[in-house]
Length: 202
Image 1 (cartoon, rainbow, N blue to C red):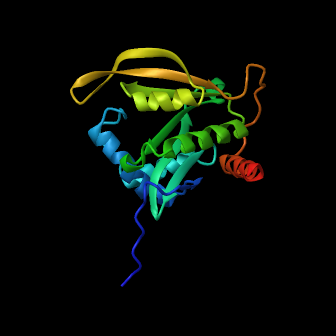
Image 2: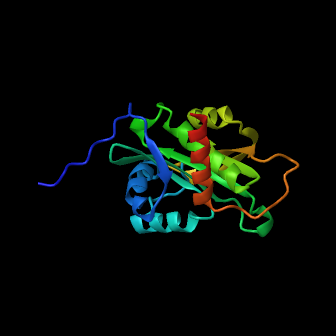
């Protein structure tokens, strides 16, 4: 009989690493209920596993996709995506965090977002954007606790679960107004550098 996987314990401090294509199934298990059951995501149907694998591969190595594991399970992830396609926007990204329901309220989302932002700073990005489908007070508390500043609301921009939905927009200055644009660092290298910095702090 094969070894049984160990279930994730919400009290266990998760470990964090950069995503791999084979994390698609674990990430999908977290994301699919968000798409199906809530208006947090404006996707109407969950993507398939192959599509999520493609998204991970398309994100790395230019931008981070970080996965939290507890036991043998993925319990959350954070990723950065292209804000706009035109080249002048390339130092700006949209940040996203998704956490399994049973691991919310235990600090996993905050730890993921802190790591994501540290990685983006290390890479040389200038601005992170947060877009929140309203209402979502938990997400707003999280991003504002890490320095995001509200910049506006778009009303009725999405229709899901029988209602028009508003989105709130937040921004975070990652580098300061005097920062000069420079080539962006590889996400894997930046994540490793962040890890080395945290090890020196301990």
